[in-house]
Length: 117
Image (cartoon, rainbow, N blue to C red; front, side):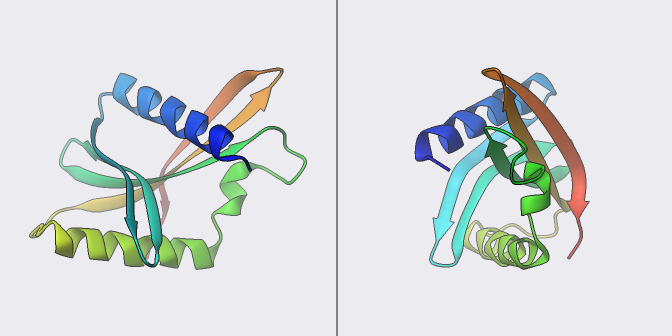
């Protein structure tokens, strides 16, 4: 996937979440182990959002690309984020936003509580 497509997907995801009332805290939090695409607040929840963007379904639905291995990696990065930002007890969850383009038009699928660790 091109960086441009990925950034476009993340921008669409941010706008989508904001329309749903989420407060975007941070984008592209990066450490050695990897990156968190979007960190947002949804009510009392701190939400770590993984965004997957595809030009087509040729390689399957983008949400299926968040494998168990990727979930564990996201969890490790989220734990580092919580420690670095000195969050105390806070309810967290992991969401996935899958964006697929059909004739240049995006379809957005938001999966809340996409996985548990």
